[in-house]
Image (cartoon, rainbow, N blue to C red; front, side, top):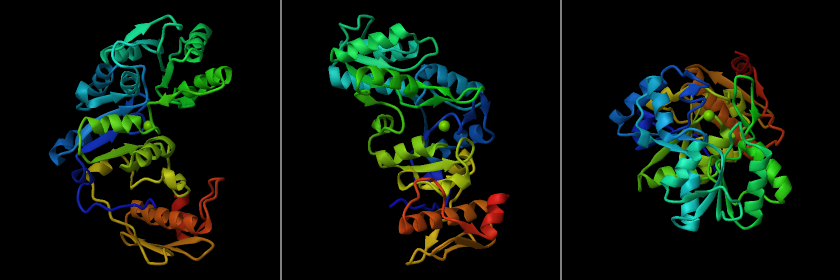
Length: 344
Ligand SMILES: [Mg+2]
């Protein structure tokens, strides 16, 4: 059962690898998130190495690292891990070096395939593997060739199945949406998916530091955090991207993080541990008490707001596990002081 843990000193000090999601954690679209650069600069002093983990396969690791450095974030090319690199690794392991691969996606995806010792082909009937990503210039012909190759037995590996990608115009069709078109034509989906929430990208990060102790930092419970849980590693959910504390109250077990933080800076902070009593109907954290009376959760005490959220989440999760998780996403009702906090 997922429970929030505590850290008596700076959280990153308890881990030797911090896997960092980018959009919503380090930057938002193209704007750096305050404190992110300073936090990442502080990680080596805590014996924790940053690894920038992204489902975006359209940019090479060098391009991503360059963009990060342009925002003042200290980043080495080798510290970037993209889903394109993981696709190439999966194909090389399945097919062996030199195998011909059809690339449907960016130049960066093609470069990752070649860097892994595979060859690229434009002939769908010659392809033994398919590296599939998404670029805005993808055409019907590209999807048709992918379908021909897959029907002919080529191993189809997708960078991710994100339904949408974030844009200034809001969420627009992403890799998963187009994969859905191919799936409809082919009658089946990809053979493997590299990116979050699949465990492949986490495993690839961990293979870079065997025996290490990683923590994943992300803003999406259904991607970053679920993937960390599936890979069996701890995670920090931050509220600088898509998730809010209120949404955290209603997370199903597979999407619950190990830690909560307002931002990436939570890596350099201590985390009070929420303490449940034996019946799990009272949770205490940092001066707050959340109590579940069988129908709703009430909050009392005082202290830092985040500690109240830690107590409320732990209480809400324990209550949902007791009364049954509501798949409509409604959290256990909270009362009085808690409602004020939610409203604030
Ligand atoms: Mg994100």
